[in-house]
Image: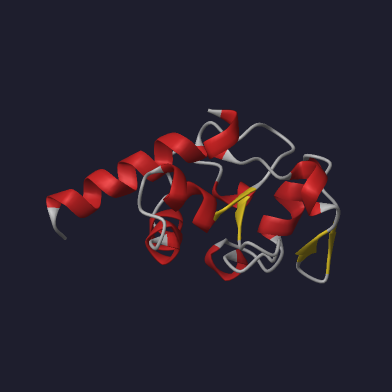
Length: 109
């Protein structure tokens, strides 16, 4: 993998580590914050590769609040369980009241 890709992944991890407990953000919001607005999918790849890096990847969802990355977590419902343990309500892989728990790094940082 190219060095610049690794650097992008590291930047994604640094932003993800700032997502507050009990809040979520989207792949696209992180990409936009990093100046790569069309790179939401790359943020997803970064989250997929974040295991073991102390990154709260469970707090990153798609723009509609869907747990699209849940199949990358061990166990069938681990992503949902982690979110629910932080007080976030999830119904059928969909975060409820997304607007109240959504954290936008472009506005918050």
